Picture (cartoon, helix red, strand yellow):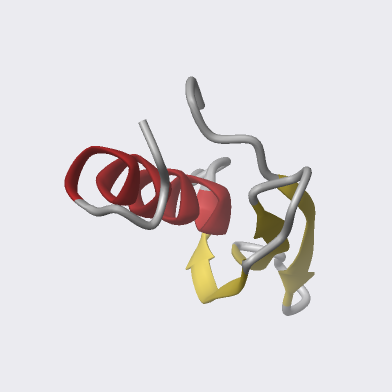
Length: 74
């Protein structure tokens, strides 16, 4: 994300015998050079076809923060 330096780790796990559902998560902190904020996003029982999961939810949050708050300096 332009203007936001984030350190993060992601993961996922398929659920059930047929593996049609997936849990996904992302955890991290920002700004990278001088951390002030941390985050964890967990999405449970998502559709396996959704390859973005928690990553996209956190991306949208960071974009909103960058554009609408002073938490992420422009």
